[in-house]
Image (cartoon, rainbow, N blue to C red; front, side, top):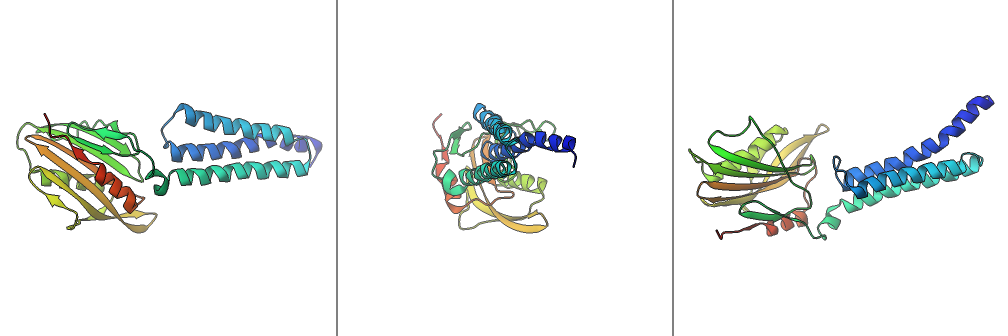
Length: 251
């Protein structure tokens, strides 16, 4: 290796350190703040770690082999620590202990630790109802809320909840939907219960448990569904969801 090539590789050292540290920041950001979410804190985290990596590289790229090895170890430790921290902060045992934001439909309120956004289902909506849809489309754990105001041909609440759950699961390739008889309650105005279904991930067939809750008041129906498509809810997580759901019955 001639001096020109050696100098070129030395100059790449700060870039390598920047890339390792910023990778840790990107992994942390995508796990903790979700992949498509951009907040001031997530931006500062990613940029701050990138700058830190560049500074480490700039300080050590001319100080010899030992300094480079030490800086590489430091950057790898930063990467590992960000992966470890993000795994803990997104674990059920941590999330369950936190206070969750409360989400409100017209009648149903419930707590869930993620943001819900209105979704446009133009062309996919029934022609006998006005429908509003809120979702959190995390492919690990999918949440959907439907509000129906039927104008005619009103279905039963039970069939409406069952069809809504089946439609989402079918869309994502899940099969064998079975409602749990021990947790399922059905009446003309209220339907709730856990259900199990199978899902394929990387050629493995997995079994998951979801939960749905539906409320009807006249021609006004509301349904909330929690569907762990790739990552199962822990029992404590599921219980916290179920216990948080309330119905405001006052006008």
